[in-house]
Image (tube, rainbow, N blue to C red):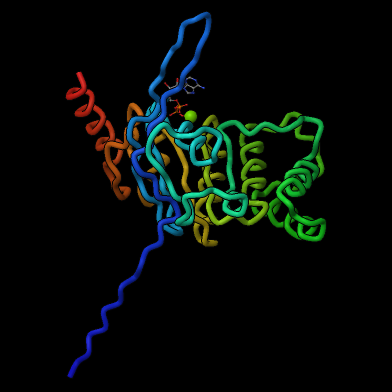
Length: 255
Ligand SMILES: Nc1ncnc2c1ncn2[C@@H]1O[C@H](COP(=O)(O)OP(=O)(O)O)[C@@H](O)[C@H]1O
Ligand SMILES: [Mg+2]
């Protein structure tokens, strides 16, 4: 008798976002302006995958990230990170974040900046002495580790931002436009780093409007348009075409 073993692999969702909605309200001189930024964001990010949230400028990518980080609260919908609805400090410690434009004081060196952020996130001196050289080497910033960041290129700042994001060895990385504003060499460096992070076991959620780049590194993408996720798909050869067709169809029905 042949025994068939059916192996059910349970996939863990690191991020589970359901129908998030957010409208910005801005009041000035008795006039209130409303901007609907998110109008139904639903997606799941699985453990150890690279998931890209793609969309045109103004489609709501950064707003989605701000909600996940707890910087804004949603009007509707909910999300879970590591299968938890409540985003406690312990959950936050498992998340590394790279903002769209990382900003640091120009008079500091990468080592000083990493020490400062590491201490803020509760790392001990011993942990930092071991970890800082590791992240500096990981992001190939060795030659600049002791130099003031004044005059750093956009690519170097981005690598420093990534070094900071991975400093406390988070399990989930949230990167807002990690390739934005970089030259081709900078893009290749960041691409390599993101790939390596996946190999090392990280789960990566990043935003981008550069679809040709997303194709090269993401496993799956969510197409965000006018604050709504129109499609979630595996990365495939005609991603750009698929994206443009998907948003065009939506716009035609939305008229
Ligand atoms: N603080 C804010 N106040 C008012 N409107 C905002 C604010 N931030 C973003 N928006 C608007 O929300 C929409 C989505 O913006 P954003 O999330 O930054 O998009 P993306 O990151 O995809 O470019 C845009 O229309 C933008 O103008
Ligand atoms: Mg943005």
